[in-house]
Image: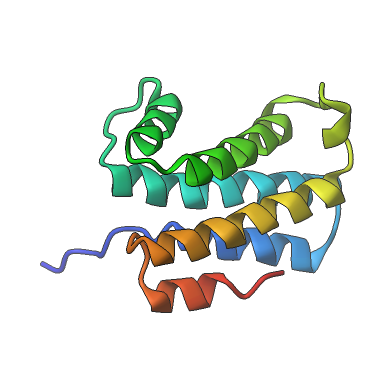
Length: 136
C-alpha cells in the first residue's frame, strides 16, 4: 500500500495562472484570484500550525502577528479581500475591485511577494519558489 504525498498548494497557483493564460473572461479571473489566495493560505496555515476550520482565516492572521510577520499577514489579508470579492460579490462592493483584470494582477503580485518571503523564512524550499515564481 503506497501513501500519496500531501497535496501541494502551489498547484493551485499554477492552476490560477493557467486559467488566466487561456482566457481573460471574468469567471476565469475570479477563479484564478480565489485559487491564488488558497495556495498561499494553505501554505501559511500549515507553517504557523493553525488547525481546525472555525475562524481559521482570522487565526492564521493572528498567528502571523504573534510571529512578527505583519508584512506576510498584510499581504495575505489583501489577497483574502480580493478572494472574497471574487467568490461572494457579483458586483464588488469596493469600487476599486470592479476591474477583474486588475484584481488578478494584484492577486498575482501578492502571491509572488508571499512566495518569495515564505522562501526567505524557510516555509517554502527554493525549488518550490522557483516553480511558483514564474509570474503570469
